[in-house]
Image 1 (spheres, rainbow, N blue to C red):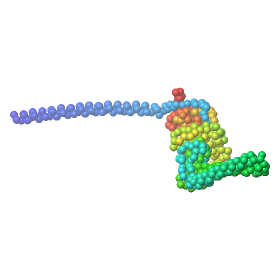
Image 2: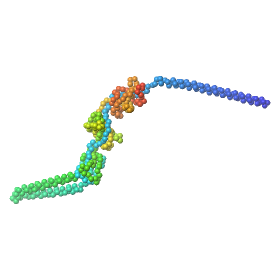
Image 3: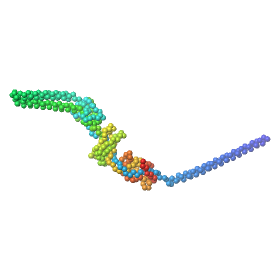
Image 4: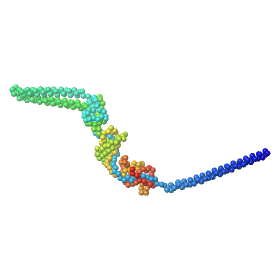
Amino acid sequence: MNYETTLTGESSAILVDDEDRTRRRRRLLIIGGVVAVALVAAAAALSMRGKDAAAPDAAPQAPVVTVLTPGQTMVARTVSSTGSLAARVDMPVGVVGEGGMVTRVLVQPGDWVRAGQVLATVERSVQSEQVNSLAAQVEVQRANAKLAQAQLERAKALVGRGFISAADIDQRTATRDQAVAQVRVAEAQLAEQRARTGRLDIRAPASGLVLTRTVEPGQIVQAGGGTLFRMAKDGEMEMQAQVAEADLATLRAGNSATVTPVGSNQHFSGRVWQVSPVVDPQTRQGIARIAVAYNDAIRPGGFASATITSGSGNAPLLPESAVQSDAKGSYVYIVNGKNQVERRDVKVGQVSDTGVAITSGITGAERIVTSAGAFLTVGQKVKPEALKAR
């Protein structure tokens, strides 16, 4: 009884083990099939991708570029230069009279003054006393002339009675005339002294702008002792533009110009009023003097750049994006008749808001690449597309 029970248990265990083995085989078969299918699919995908990747190598697609045929446009010919700012008429003001100690200084740099306005005064106590003395002398001489006239008139009244001779009348007439002349001499001496005293006032020779002041109260000054003030007549300014010899020949008085002081973003309109008749043999440059209206941004002694319009002419006008540059200079890319990229070296002229004028290198009939030139190579095949008008 016990033996049978034990045998039955062992049989059941054997059956369970067989079922587990069967299930495991099925799972392995299923997993193997799935893996095999996945490998086949991956191989097929790689094969298709390889075919697709090989197609562009066999026939690469040409990039699309935008081109422009600029033609000819009327543009201004300009000359660029640099130079110093200055007063158009720089007036030094010094001592005119005999000089002395400065008592007052009445203006500061930057002040506007009128012609004849007093800029500073010199001590004049001695000169004032001399004026008073000469004024008294004038009064003395006038009194003498008045007395001589009265004596002459009384003598003439007595001539008819025989008390005064004709010779006495002549003598008294001469005395009267001499007294009158002495009055004139005294008056002239007084006027001279007053003029000398007036010259102790340092005055503006013309209306204008005070630029510098080198005198202070208490300073001793004398005639020929140096410049006390510098003025710009009528406040007129100019730029003394340094221009290359070749460009100087193209300029004329009356050419318009634009002046830009260094450190300022302001532009000032001006006009050339004088072109230097000589050229510096060392620098091979001459000076074009450009008159500019007064502005507080224009300071004499400062530095500025100028663009002078020397004329006008026809030239191709390109957008800035079309012009490239490297160590060899400026150039553009053109598309030839075979739709291949070519490099063309050019010379750049006037640059403005409307574009870049090309003075040489192209005629304007070419197809110019307007953008993305940095990504192209010479000889590359492209697909040109005309730039659409805005």
